[in-house]
Length: 546
Image (cartoon, rainbow, N blue to C red; front, top):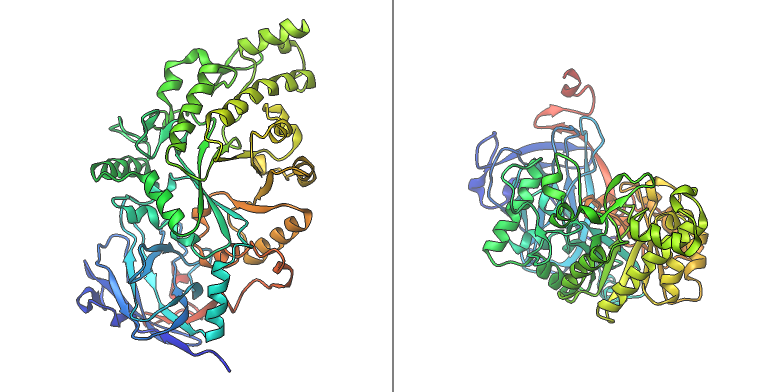
């Protein structure tokens, strides 16, 4: 017996009716007739320049259903599109997009959103038009698939089961404000809501752009763009203005994120890009730290003595400054601290204290040795080990410490990282191996590092956009090699695309991956358009003329 299926294709029946028009009209959604190989209906569109009210679609049903969204898009590099949706009783919207890449966009993406009890529920549609990045919003239809009692029981049991929670999402807490102006808690929450009822155990939430430039009310560093009048990009202004608006409303962005993540059952670690203290023009006004500017004596030095635009961890002052940021983050009581060493190397080079100490011990000047000299590299790593020891000692022992490292042992050692010591001394609890400069990760090296230890190993799965089947195959292969879980850099750019998210969100089911297909026809499918707005688009479409 097949599950009952309901289609809501005539979305011009949304309320308020006064906010919908057949023609392009300011302050109104546009209703556009369409025809596919399977259905006919009326989609809704809000142009990027328009300002329109929220619409709600009364469902007038009861019980549990799978919810599918029919999304349309225009594949034009100058036009970004997407729509924010929520159920009436949801605390926040989520932002979703159809898959890009099809010139002339002659089809609709039908994508799975979520399963829920829809008794007394409406679906609410919001136009994405806040901040500088105004978008065109489309919604073609809603499809609901009735769930049986047994299916509902299985869903509820699965949501209580933590055995498949082995995924880590990473949000830089920068793009969140860059692509929209955030003026309420909801604007923060919608970047966390997508992790609800998924295989994600943890969310790594960055403290800002990195270093000590923060997107929370810091007392140690500087709030993003707080003293600027001219910004290099419109998105940078949106971030700075978001910070001012939130501060005026006494909203602490970090506290808001942590509370909501824990509320939906997600552990949250606060992340810092450990080398991001300076950037060249035109971004220097935004990204360069006052601590960096005021302490030229604490910067890295290359072997020829020339300055490198990094702060050096060879200096106690730099170590202490970074730890003061980490301690401020830990005061929010997250589940852990995440040190992002995969962005911002080098951290230690040929600084005077390090060079003189080496000369004293070995009677050799390291600047006259090969850059790859192992005696020198191992000595440099000892200096960095001291910093990691201080981090562990200064932070709450209940906090987990995670590190993002490079692709292999050679890269790690060159930049001063000695993860074997960090693990054996108990300085860290988790390693995320990252494909440094797009190089392959030496999985065996990392597997041997954590073998017979309490340290967990995760692999950062890149590139950011892959097909569902590519995600499945990559994950399946890594689990077979013995990794504990997977991490997703910039996950906030992935959960908006429900086609790939349909696979990503369940990649913790490592025992079942081998028997899965990519989910096409179950979680997503493309439906060919025949007509759009009265124009035939399936054969010799009008767009060919332009």
